[in-house]
Each structure stands twice: as C-alpha cells, then as structure tokens.
Length: 197
Image (tube, rainbow, N blue to C red; front, side, top):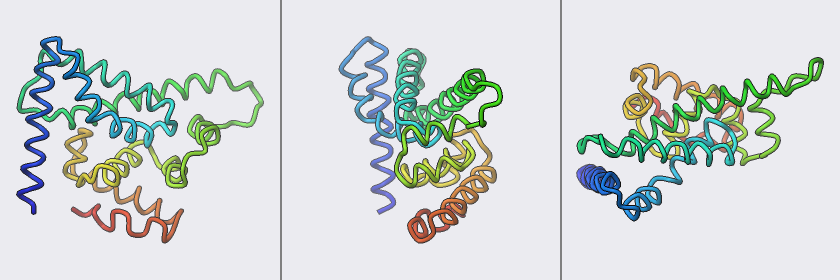
C-alpha cells in the first residue's frame, strides 16, 4: 500500500515537472493542465489562512503567475506541489498583512475595533470549521489546513512551510486542540494525533 502511494507521488512529481518544462517552452495547454491539477488545493490552503474565498482566489492567481515566472529555471527533481504550498503560504501571509493595514486605515477613529479576520468571517460566514480556523494563528491555520485537506504529516508540513519539524508539530497540535475545544465531537476524529507523526 505504502509503495503504491509512493509510486503515485513520484508519478505526480514527474508529471508536474514535465508539464512545467513544457510551460517554460511556452505551451499554454501544459499550464492549463497544471492549473487544473493544483488550483483547488491552492485555494483551500489560502482560504484557511486568509479566511475568505474571494481573497484566496486572488492569492491563487498571484501564485500561478509566480509559477509561470519560475518555470524556465525549474529543477526537474523539485516538487511543484511543495513549491505551490510554500508560495501560497507566503502570498497569503502578505495578503493578510496588507488587509490588516488597509483595515486599520479604513476604520474610523473611535469605532469599535474589528479585526480583518473577523470582518472577513462575518462577511463570508464560511463553513463551521472555517469559522473555527479563523480563530487560529496564521501558522496554525496553515498547518491544520495542510494536515486535514492535504493529508500531510508534520515533517511534510515543515518542509512545505520552511519550518522545523518540532515547530510544525507544535503548531499543528495546538491548532487541532483549539479546533476540538471549539467544536468538540465534530472534529474529535480529525487528525487524531496525526500531530505526533
């Protein structure tokens, strides 16, 4: 079973690297294929960090434009999916900071302070788990989203986000604990101590 998973991952890595090589040569169909293969996971991760599907789509657009830029220098042994996750995390964090600055400037003096995350959550009123994720720190959101949506282990999360394995384990463990405390049984099974792997 594990060897089948490994083979599938290797096949996906090779397929993505070949597609990116064709993108570097100017082939639009290859870019479209990469976009179809990864767009949803990029948007899911970005939504988990920025809290808004609309903002997440903007993040995804920036991420795929960046992928076009790096295509000519791509090393065939690198994983496109890992690069996309790390870039999504970085672009999402930049977006959050920009929204926070904008919100501070736009909020009239003396008005009750409402953070950008809360405002986005109120405007979007996402799914229940999305609302819970909104309470986590950006790093915890990213680790929980990668673990629950992508099935990544803490070691893989650490590699993706450029963290140490211990920092990834800690952020994931705290994030899952906070989700379970907020939603109880609804998320009790989610990531059951996958945080220890």
